[in-house]
Amino acid sequence: MLSRLFAPTIEVSAHCDLPCGVYDPAQARIEAESVKAIVQKALDSDDPDFRTRAILIKEQRSELVKHHLWVLWTDYFKPPHFEKYPELHTLVNEATKLAGATGTKGTLDIGKADELLAKIDEIAKIFWETKQA
Image (cartoon, rainbow, N blue to C red; front, side, top):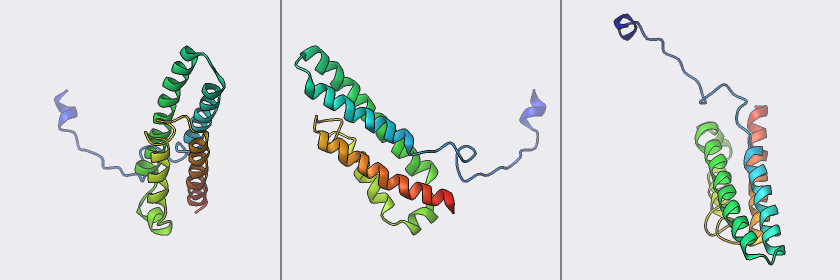
């Protein structure tokens, strides 16, 4: 046991948490598509209990969108990406706000869901360009 504590350490490095290939903006997009579908179902329903459940699920899914975007922003994208794509910080900020309280999390505005999907598509375009490099 003590030999393990005092054993030589091995230094390793990586440019991401795990081997590349685990990040994908599709995760955020799938959740955002779910949010849009839930908003539409809530708007189409007259059942207050159904609408309450739908709103709760929509808020949870919106939070997942933010989570997936933040993982890309903090764990995948690196300084060279931000240098090549200076708009990336703004895109991620705008997308997470669209998934937040003034966006899909806090409203039943289908237009906000469409705006969120469009921002995710812009982020995905940059993401896939970085994967080609």
